[in-house]
Image (cartoon, rainbow, N blue to C red; front, side, top):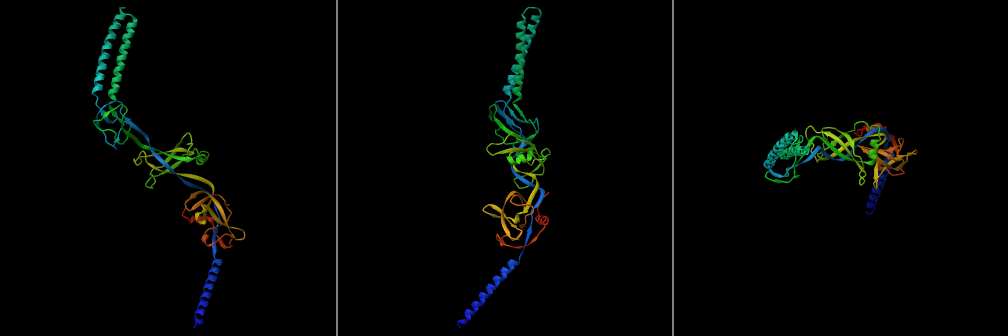
Length: 360
């Protein structure tokens, strides 16, 4: 009776050994797909954090002190150039103007009388000059009083959108007090910072004199419906960050963009003779990228590579590979360094075309 369990155990062991042998034979018989890097001209899309500014964004402040009599607009209103926005009570300034006009009239009469006497050699030329100076001063006082009165009516200096009201009707205003801000959003200036190396590539590139078109990715992860153009670069680098600011101009006909928004600039960077490999052909060990290279004896050799840029499904290899190197495309987890394999060499262009990528 004891022989039967022993017999069954031997059969199970033989079956397991047979299965393992079968798996090993199957593993050894497997043919892997291998390809080579592709050397071609392409482009990558770089993304930069951006700040959005109105082409004109100003503070409206009271030029005179006094009682705020009327507010003709509301927060968020679109106002037109010359439209009345605020009215400071003008009574005092009107009185000052009337007083100045009366004094100017008296000075004018005095000057005319002095001139008649001067023509008759009754008064000296110096007295005539003094009368003229008093007359000119009185006229200047009239102009000054008129200017102060005009400043009590605050009008929009350009077409734009009004922001938050900092005062209310009935407020007592001091000279220079902030009333609101006004933004001209017909065109937007979008600022983004570029690293020194990227700036040098841009400024020394063959296309530096051509218009550089960019796109704006908004906070809702949608592309703004108008393209932008890089129009200016600031004069110096930020010593703390090593970056320099670029400015792109975007038309804003639908008024979608507002001052103070954020987004991301998307800029295409051309790459000449870029060495491309599929991302799936790489693996990572301790934050370093590797591929399996097949040598002349069909033996796998683990090789570290440096990645320069990333495109959808592809890596641009900066160093570590040559265009003629054969790399393992699939089955990376099934093999080990130093293993000899059988493989089929797949055309790299065919591999790339099946990766649903974009390359020019």
